[in-house]
Length: 97
Image: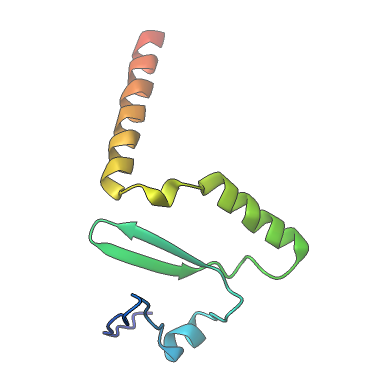
């Protein structure tokens, strides 16, 4: 499903997700949204599987706790950290042989 629209943010930087898109993705005022900045873009997707039950809300809280602070860093910074971790893991594997 590809839908495209062009919009501009208001004075506060807010944008509106068009109703046709909200309806297609079942986004209501109670659906949490994941907002990710990658490279030169922003990606928004609904977390619709996080429903209204106490158990699912607890799962959502756990996700937020595990990922706290990850959105505060730029994509480039996260990529550099990942690369450092990958190199360290590679060195550890080489020492096992």
